[in-house]
Image (cartoon, rainbow over all chains, first blue to last red; front, side, top):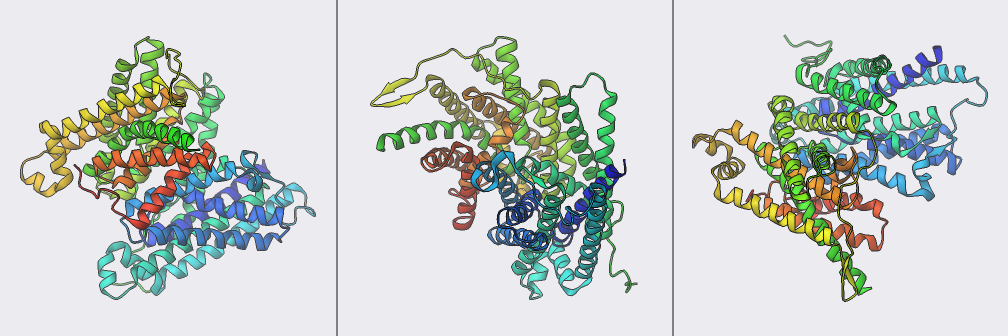
Length: 302
Length: 288
């Protein structure tokens, strides 16, 4: 039971980290990213490959995973930044799907659909499994805290103000002399760095990655975390990560009470409930539990 | 080698003609409603399953089954647009696009609850391939291509000659002007959802006729359909046809160097290439 709760805590932390990243991309800069899971996968595979094939230290692998996520984000944003947002939606989704296909087929590198197993975890050899779980939870909590503080700092810095200006009216920001394109690419890259880091943390926690994890549904979970928490708000992002995990686990407990469902049906029902909930959240609570603050948290404008 | 290439080009043209049907649906919806509707994937699957029920359970032949596929996917398209996607449109295209992905996964799982994950095939007569000059052609594929061409001709006639078709083009071209001239935008949105998603349903079944169907049928081809629409110019219907043929032939020719699993990646690379070199697509964005 404790292990289960600790594992949920780690998952919630990873969702929160990704929601913080998404908040920079979507909440602050107003850019669409429908391929969140692709950047998560880039981080997971980068760190997993570096540590298992080249024997790189785990910490270095995680940093490399985060950087790889950011670089992938910058490239995708560079190609589409000049175009209308709908192209960014298509390209990000296509990026994630193409990456999953590639990971399933380049068996020499990623071991295909069998996945990479035996990814080392920090201190795993010296700790018991439950101690490892707790230690990892502590690590994730610390990283989420750091990410939150950085994102908060970013949000109230001049950089964050320019992002919000671009989100609200791109032309005004451009007329004010801001290099809109560079800001967009940078925001996208920063957000994707957080996604890549979350991927690396995931890989070293479960010690196993397969292409099947990186499905579009995971992208929707993160969107849901940020939407239910509050778009444009870092506290909302963290809270949303927790809300989504509680909701996901809750639906898992509903399905056994419906006796005529087989395993496939039960899984399908769970996914259906999750997506239906997202649609409802999207429809009625677009401001989320913690709405975006109107201005600086300390220096309020009257 | 030359013969292999010729065979691949023939296969690609046939695959591209089929791909053009859902691509027209996607681009028509985009032209009027101005958002990339990812729910197209699940509607293609809805059509494929509706056609499967007609063909295998009820014993209908292929053409009426395709009619049912069109009707079922079209009606689901109107219903989901009315109750799920329409309220999002005021919140902007990003929210609508996310909503359409959630919708596509929701519908896909609804189908999975009813039909399970098993692969299903249509009842088709077994035929021998036609051969000439060392090339071969499947009669079923030729029939599918002919059906696609007829469907496309019907779409073009609908747009050119009917009041509803003209209203659609007017809204796509200039929504403000269309409103001034008394075109009911809500009604046009319903028509385009019905026709667009109906075409997706026909496309889903045509693709299924070649292989098998399961709840992921539509999702697997989604990237190719989007590639066709983007390559041709998102919002341009003749562009979608040209784009679909390009993607169809491109995906087949890439088999010379890649395994078939990479089909959808080829579509993605085509999207990137077009966005870098010619962002408005081959034919630009005029609807018709």
